[in-house]
Image (cartoon, rainbow over all chains, first blue to last red; front, side, top):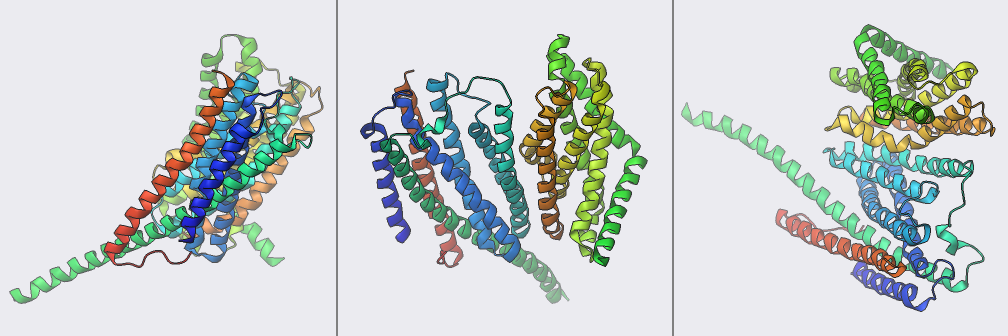
Length: 245
Length: 229
Length: 47
């Protein structure tokens, strides 16, 4: 019940923040209307990375305490994270085309790091899908989640160095809106969107976690059913022999 | 202190066992090296015949060949245990998991060092890159790259080798992780070959070392959980 | 496409995507809960 309330509050928050970002806030002097994309792009990226953090930490927690509920949380984080990572990349591309003139820019460390994040998440989810035993799945996923999480900062720094040592023109910084000299209205618009997306994120995590728990219990029931059926057929075969004697 | 000595002994024993089976099953290791050389040859067909373009691309192509060969190498080093059910046996021994990891990672790094070292002259010939005085920093870069790749590869190979779709899962998981390793190794190679005009070789080698250390620590810490399942 | 087009594409896909994912989750939750009821198990405990 409380989750449903959260869902409605999140919905209203997103609508409000979007209306604000699209119609209330003025367009940027340099980037024009394309600047508005930043609000959803940065918010999506923020949520994506936070989600990834949840997955990594929940996985670590599973390795320590062996509580499958933590594994369910890790899965929720990963699935929600994939989606927001895709959003972040899409937003980055939609911003890049009008502002940079190209959909993709290798020298932007955020874009390339986020693309790698997507690849890592998808690998994580595929790994889960291909492992049937819940304990094994949880352990493997936790290891992969940890290694991936540790890799992300390395990727980020390496791409920054990659760009820094290359003598090329400096491209427009997508997160200019985070610049201290940015107009207050822009910063507030971003914070509003961030808050709204965070509410959505928590709502989605809860729902996905609930789904994971129910599906795990169904899995368990099916597994016990199969064992019982196998045992039952063995007993059945034995009892058929008796009366024939 | 005694534990450390015992752990070291275990690690070396495992690495030595792997090295022996690599040398005995010579065809497998040799085939992988030949495959990597073949990849380099094919790159020539794909990007050539302009030798200047190939010379510029050479460092990147070298490391791609090392990565592809490395994937096969890491899978092979774990296949033997998987086939014999030795992983489950290993898990039963009261031995520090980190020692097992260290042994396998050592074997992996050594195999990849050999792979990379042998590909250097191939690249030199196919793409017309004189190695000259650069051979030392090049070898260092290859060694650091080998260690990093083996650090992650040991963990991931141990993970995927008993899975469905194992052939695709190892590359799928490895490639995004080694992206920064690839980046840094290529940059270090370029710097070495050009005499390091911008003085950036040190930075890239440092990045490689950081990657290696971080991945070795995480790999050693988590390997035990992979054996237990 | 003017900048406005890209803005619409960005917001449309992202906000629309969120809505689709919510709908998808709620649907799967409904199906799972029905199946759980049939098996006789308890529904979701407090998380």
